[in-house]
Image 1 (cartoon, rainbow, N blue to C red):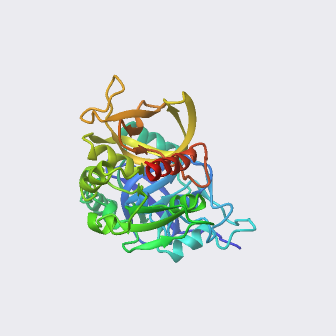
Image 2 (image 1 turned 90 degrees about the vertical axis):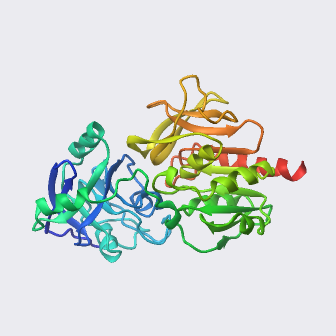
Image 3 (image 1 turned 120 degrees about the vertical axis):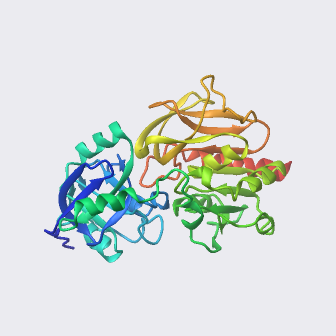
Length: 375
C-alpha cells in the first residue's frame, strides 16, 4: 500500500502574514479556513471526517501522520470535512492490516488539500500566542500578496452558521442492537457516527433528523429521548433548535447534548457563549466531574464555550447547574438542569479512538429515559 509523498512545493499563509513553506499533500488546489491545532497522537481519519471541523485547516501536533493508512470502518462521516490538513511528516509507506489506502491518496481522492514538512511546533506556538486565525494552503507559485487579500476576505468563525448545513440533510435510522428499548431522535448538526452507534449498542433505535427540523416533526417520531449533536461554527448563529429544546424539556422528554449540542442547550436556558482564543482540540483534556469528584481524560473539539461565573454559576441560566470543569483553563465542560431531565457536556464521550473515560454518559442518558418511562 505505497503512498509516496509528492515533491511539489506548497506553503501555508496566515492572515497576519506568517508563512510556512513545505510540501503539498493530497489535492493540489488552494484551501481556505480557520487554522487550528489538534493534539491527538492517533485518530487522524476520525479528525478528517469529523463534521465539527467544517471550515477549518487542522494542524496535527503529533509529528507523524498516516502511518497506519486509512480504512472504511473508522470514519465519522462518509467523506472528509476539514478544509485542509497540516502535518509535520506524512508516512511514505503506511503499514497496517486494516489499512486500505494511504493518507495522501485518501486526501487526493476526496479533493482535500494539505501540506507536510512544515514546523508544526512553531505553527502551534504561534496560534497559542496569537489565537486561531484564517489561513490558506497553496502551491508555491501562487502569489502571496494576492493570497493574503483572499484570506482576509474570508468570513470569520464568529457569527458563522455552519451547523445547519453540516449534517446529512435527510432522515435516516440506526437500528438498535438486540432488543429495542428506547427510541432516540438525534438533531443532526454534524453528528459523528459513533454517537448513534453507542446508543444503538445500548438498545436504542436512533432516528437522525436535520438540525432545522420543525418541532412537530420531532413530536411525530414519538421519541423517548432527544440527542443534540456536535457540530461546527458559532452556536450563537444557530437558533433553530432552542425553542424545541425548551418545549420538549418542559414536557419531560430526556435531553442529552454534546459539544455544539451542549452550547445550544445552555443557550436555550439563558446562558451565553463566546469564542475561545484557540479552542480545545485534542484527546488529552482533563475534566473534573463535580458530582463524583473524579477526573476524566477527554477528547475535545470546539472553538466556543459556555460562559461561566466565578462562583460556579452559569450567568443568565439560573435553572442550570455546573457539573464539569476543564482543569486546563476552568471553562464550563458540563451542565445539568436543576429540575428537568436535561444534561450536556462540552467534550466528546463517544470519542474514537479514545479516550473512553466518559462513555458512562450514554448510560446516564439511558437511566434518564428509564425514569421518564416509569414516571
